[in-house]
Length: 237
Image 1 (cartoon, one colour):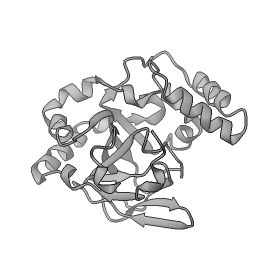
Image 2 (tube, one colour):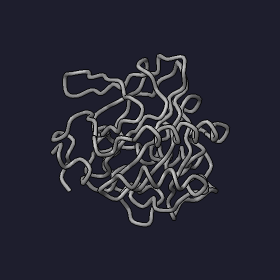
Image 3 (cartoon, rainbow, N blue to C red):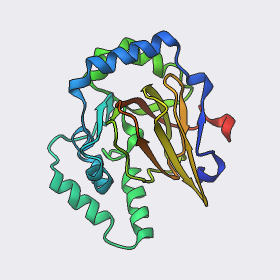
Image 4 (spheres, rainbow, N blue to C red):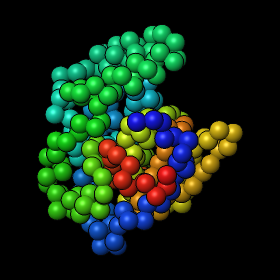
């Protein structure tokens, strides 16, 4: 599929994915119950961090996740040194070659690095399946990588680019957040910023450089979904 980055906005509300008040309340209760089970991004998927090791290391102390889906091919016996070696191997040549290398290994079938193959439900998902199923049932397209994410109060995400929406469509649903948590995107010569409202669903164009700065005294919790296909954002195209 051709690149979609420039055909889509930096971010947009996706109305049909917005949550009803009761469902949002259920998610709020869920993250409170799971508070002690959030772990660093380096721990949730060690192998995937081999592609984004520098980013993962830079947010290690303030960015936490609970994986709700996983890859059938993910291995637990991958240590941080192997992640770093994988990263260095990808980026040992020119920037353009690094991008090609990252794209190639992330799209290989049967690879734990391929987010499109995150179809295995984790124990965390099955424990709260009645709630998570209601959220994902709203999607028109196939959902793959799903996770709960926590960003600590007074911290930020390192500005970064993930992938073009042609590879996967990123949907963010804030669960607990306030107006002092700001999403930022760099689009050509503009810097765009907005706040995401709890219960609303947002498309985020991860092909552009983006970041989140949490100026709030409160931690931010979000429900993050990667979708394989553009069915839920076709109206934006």
